[in-house]
Image (cartoon, rainbow, N blue to C red; front, side):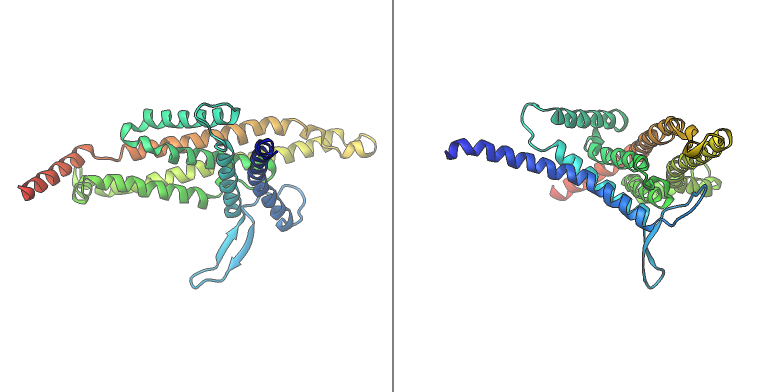
Length: 306
């Protein structure tokens, strides 16, 4: 009897784990939606505002603000973690289920993208690039369920850009601090301020490009929906009873606009941000100076050993 029950128990445990992981993907968005409903003040007409502030914690310099964009970002992160665990649950040597095929396809595409744009030296960056793509795309697409897209907050995109900027500077210093510092004065010393501004323009442009495109799409969609509602009342308000209050012109048209402004634009901006990250990091390595430093260190070690 025990040999007969063992497969059923394993199968039951497997299904229960799957259900828990699916709940891990869905519940963060449910919690974020509930918080938005509870904290959103009543308003009439067109209402375009930034992220809601859920909590302010007193701090010595300034209050620590817990905003809607921060909470939604953590919701997206938890949901992505649940998706990754779900896709990799029950892996086998040979793919026998569709989710393992999907996981392998994602890994292969991200690895190919990194290899083609960054080279073999950065082949281990596939997981980082996949994280950027997933976090950025899902953050932008969260507006489809009525949430404030974290990518519509410049603080969020600026945080990502600063992280990328730190990685860029890390690889630029591989050739030595003096080589980097002297490079600011090339081709002539007069260009040093311009070159320095160019260094800091990278994270600024990355942050504002991502933020601006996502926010502008949300604003245009909101204005278009409000305009269609007013036009519907003007043209069809003469209909009897409750029919005159139904915004017929808002049915379908905003959804078509959302395909571009929310879905296509959000996914495209995630791809652009990932591409800029790969190009800037891979292009930051001063290979000649780095190889020269490695050769000098090798010679010094050889001389010391001899």
